[in-house]
Image 1 (spheres, each protein chain N blue to C red):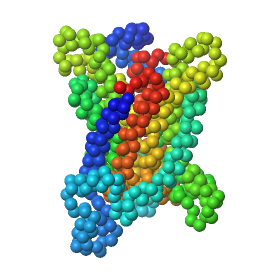
Image 2 (cartoon, rainbow over the protein chains, first blue to last red):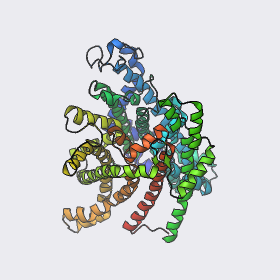
Image 3 (cartoon, one colour):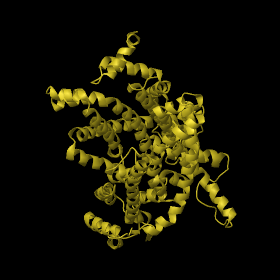
Image 4 (spheres, rainbow over the protein chains, first blue to last red):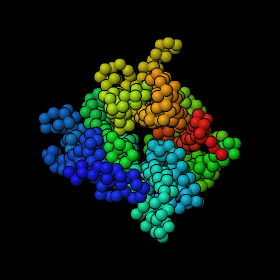
Length: 301
Length: 321
């Protein structure tokens, strides 16, 4: 009710330059996000995936790590909803366990790389001069490296395991946010309200935290959401090529490692892990799209 | 203009230098050089032979010495020697480049033919059912893990329908001429479709949003209000401006033409440069990997310059000083 009472006030708050008035702005964002159907579905699916990954393995009644050679390659059906794999492990249970790994790798890696990117972008955009030139060169360098092959190289260098895959994703993921944040900071820094803050003697710290950060936050949130999907895709590709998460620990990517050989005899092994990746990444991308529309006050629909 | 160009070219050098050092450092320090791989395949090799092999290939020297030697050869245009294939790298790349070019160019051409009209149509009918379907397909295109998409295509069209072979490049013993050409097409159909689909998925979004942007401009309203036919407004005024960003996107795709489609080529067993890169990295054939990575990096840097120049040429409002 409250939200509906002041639709213009929210718009008005955004039209006047300056840090957005928080309560009304976020209320407007929430209202717009709710109306974006794909985004809402994406959010609901993501939430269910997380619940399934956390609680699911306990419910299925199978212990995925137990190898049972009498049960290998059971097709989907009663008892094993999505069948069993080459070692007789229940595919549903493994998918959920893999979901824990893939989702947490995606979320952790993206949180770190977005934070690093934000920091670098802020430093470059705020301090300018040679700091900016140096950091921009660094961003360009990383952007010019063919990322997939470079991720393989780095994964080989660091060795396999959870920490190294996260490091790999971070090292080749931070520069997109950095480039974006730098541009935004440069743009906002020139606006009148920042000059006003400087004139009344605000410290750099205050300007960054109270004036720049709130204005840069919306695009950061959007890239963060989209980057989670990208990170999950990258992790699955690296694990598929055998350089990421190693068996017996399951990830959606390494479950597909031998999928191609089993296409004739046990195609379900090749299908379901990919479906899990697709649904997850699609959900994050839809959420990102919805957030982009919801967070941008200039889009009126 | 000349000054701008010279400046940009000069900036490229330290950039490429930095990239090469970083990649060389990581590649040479990563465990598993080709000699190690060779030992794994033949456990009977004795330690003395390993030493001799490593010395013969210069793998026993410190990293920095190897880097300087490599850089010296690279500057003289010598890409080096592949330990795994026992061939000069330039020859390896030359053998595979035609395969990659035909795959990527077919894929890109299909993507363009598909994405441009569809994107424009979706923009002209924003929020229509077609628009939503196109958006959804495009979202699918960049949310799907490529390697898995390839596997699913193989499952549907090769395993179940048996329309095309499940991978590879050619059938041995096919008569040259038309039968051979048709044979190649059958092998290329699936990988080219995969390349086309994900390229189109990215392109269609650009085309759609840039067409929407163009349609919002004042000159479109002017054109309409002076009574021009809608087709003239769209074709002469909106389209021309909407397709400009496409030039940038396409010039940025130049490196991908050379670098191929690493994932797609690997899944389909297509002997292209992308597959060569992936295999070289995985098998520790550093010199090949370095050569491929550096050529791609040079192309990436050059392509961004070409894109900027093309943009300035097309849009008279942009001037580089």
